[in-house]
Image (tube, rainbow, N blue to C red; front, top):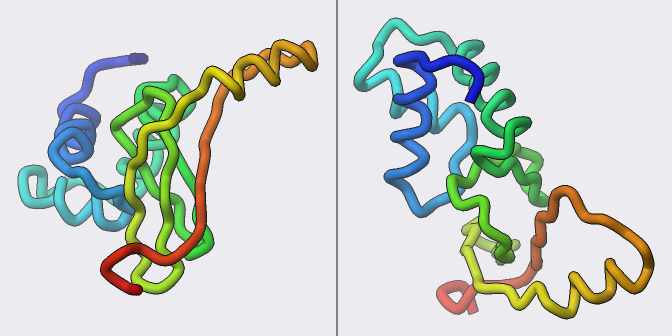
Length: 122
């Protein structure tokens, strides 16, 4: 991590304590509960830096918003097109790694999003 800051730690704590995949605005509202003076710009800058450094994941789904995930280990995201839920799912990356190696490709970042309808919306 670049530099420690109270704001960055608060942002990470909010992400660490949720199993949803929040947007920057949602994170901003939660962080404001403990740091009322934080600006939305500060939240966006820190999220960009944390994502760029690989400490969190940034993902885009069909809702047009950027979402963030504290879990950086390879996994899939199931996005319900009806209710908008984003659900983490285990992923066997071995076949994908083999395919990449066979093609001489070295992955640096992987984000898997599967679109469909969740069990609650069926």
